[in-house]
Image (tube, rainbow, N blue to C red; front, side, top):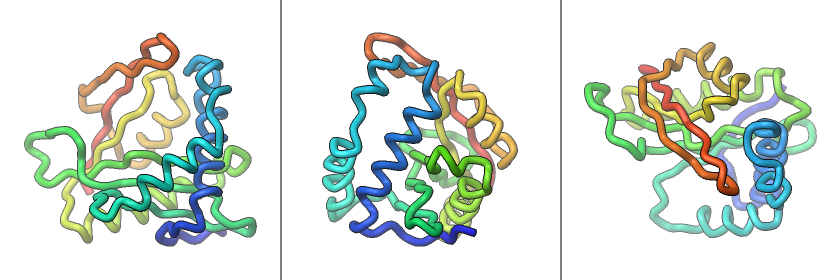
Length: 171
């Protein structure tokens, strides 16, 4: 069974592999294939190194470790949008698990640890965004207690506009 720890710089390549392969698996048939095909582990790792080295970054990264090293990754921090009536709100920015290991509880373990850390940091609620057509992810978050709150935003991928829905839950 995987265990969760803070991400370190040496994890960047593995996390980028998880993220890119995760996008390509989760969003096939949703995000234009040309966009997915253009994603590279090298490009993602370069951007991730820049983000990771920022001295005042407010986000936190956790990895789930399995027999072969990192097999899942979650990034979270303060909510980037204003949500009224919920107190202090954190946000799950990204959560990806190696596509061949989905369904084994790794994502849930990462999410549970994130919720615990958010509570320890004084957050009272958590929010996240999910593509409307990503039914698997929506079911996952709903089982974890998240509910659609009516927030929506448009994202454009290779000139195709997709809708993201905001979810939230009390911690």
